[in-house]
Amino acid sequence: NRTGNDTDPIKTENERKELQNLWNIAKRQYLLQKQQTEQYEMLERQRAENRRKEIEALRKEAQELELEKRKRMEMEKKIEEERRKQKKAAEESSERERLRRAAREARNKMEQTVNLDEQNLVMSGYKEDTDT
Image (cartoon, rainbow, N blue to C red):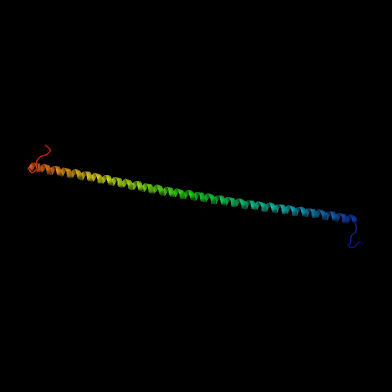
């Protein structure tokens, strides 16, 4: 009869080999799991870095678009101001021309009136005709 302390060398060697195989399997599984975890963590870091770069690129693009928008608005403002100036200048110019015409007409009427008055004076004998 055998007791708890087995001394059969063949059985002991087989158990040792089986335990060694189980240990190697467990060790391989652990290393594989560790490798997969490291790969997953590396992938997550790469994804986070890519997201950060993408966000930064989008932020930069938004700033550039905002700058373009601001420049365009300033240009439109300058163009509108120039249009207003030109319109005002045109209005002032047409007003000056209208005043010149009115002054010319008034001068012509005054000259006609003076000429008529002189003719009347000549005809009535109060003034001598200097033109003849």
